[in-house]
Image (cartoon, rainbow, N blue to C red; front, side, top):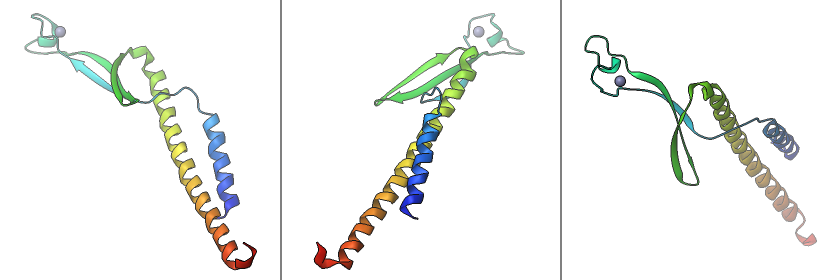
Length: 121
Ligand SMILES: [Zn+2]
């Protein structure tokens, strides 16, 4: 691929990054639980109904992993933030891939320029 094309793609990645909204890392899981208290619906012998759903958000930051509960009304917002973070990661990885290719290309160009004109060094 040509250097110009790579540069254009990098610019595109940058502008997509600028458009990202709120984000946060992590994954959301839905859980149900049984409190086991006698007489509670969760331990009903015929039709036990567990408590929940509870939404748990897990993430790690700076090597430390954390889990926290998320209230159901915040779940849609958190899902959006998680999706934005995934997009952020994908875009930065794409940027790195393009940057590596561009760097390689430029080094090769420089090398071939030198070998074509060995006395101009
Ligand atoms: Zn219960």
